[in-house]
Image 1 (cartoon, rainbow, N blue to C red):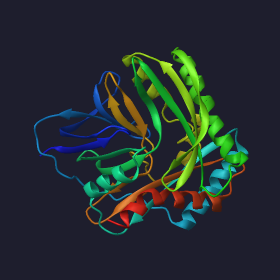
Image 2 (cartoon, helix red, strand yellow; image 1 turned 90 degrees about the horizontal axis):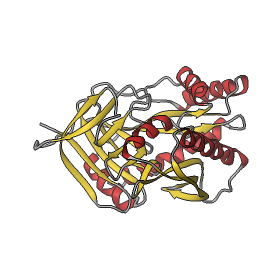
Image 3 (cartoon, one colour; image 1 turned 135 degrees about the vertical axis):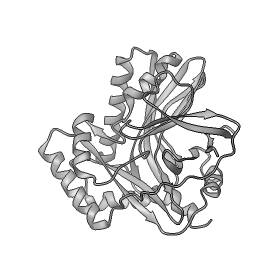
Image 4 (cartoon, rainbow, N blue to C red; image 1 turned 90 degrees about the vertical axis):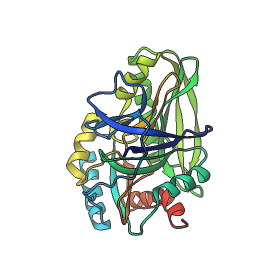
Length: 316
């Protein structure tokens, strides 16, 4: 039996392919649908084949984060920010959804509910079953060797105002993108104006850059960009070291990237996602901390982000 691959790039039709995922040492020469874990230690490419797909469940359940655990970790992260030379770090947590959920039905509903998101459903014995609806483009194609990359950061409810904290979060990601793209010597680099975008029940700040690149450059740029400060922090290496000290769970595919490498490439950061098991599913949630963060507010932000999937799951 084969694996499952279904996805929908915004403004395009749904794609379903037969075949199997294969783990690879690196993505530099591959073409097709690819997945990378957050830490890049596990990377996969989908190989089309005429086999019928089936759902695969991982045997090891992820480690959930209680409210008390989160507050303890959030305080530890803030302490690390104040002690070190770190401007921003991302703290994630895992939430269990107790009821059994049909991943295929969830995929269909997410496609209908979030037309501007990249929606996917993947399943393999290599990594289990995941479904997501992510708003963040790592690298997207506009045709004729032209691409764009987004700096998406800062989160608030539509009724709230942007604060200095969210603006600082977004600025750090924007400047990181600019630094990487200039170092990769892309041509025709130009900025995308800052705007507020809606993503399910929350809003984010988004800017970015348009540039020219060839197909070989695209994966090299993606590898250089990932993980951006939107899912790691700034400076990146120091923030990652702090994250690995504080978080007690494996992010697995959460906050990694996935999408299509081809003449018309699209890669997305794997946010707003869930991992499925036989009798339950688990949501992966995160938020950016700066020195001005309040742990209570950051907890509430993750709760709000959870509604992207929970609002659909609870009505299936």
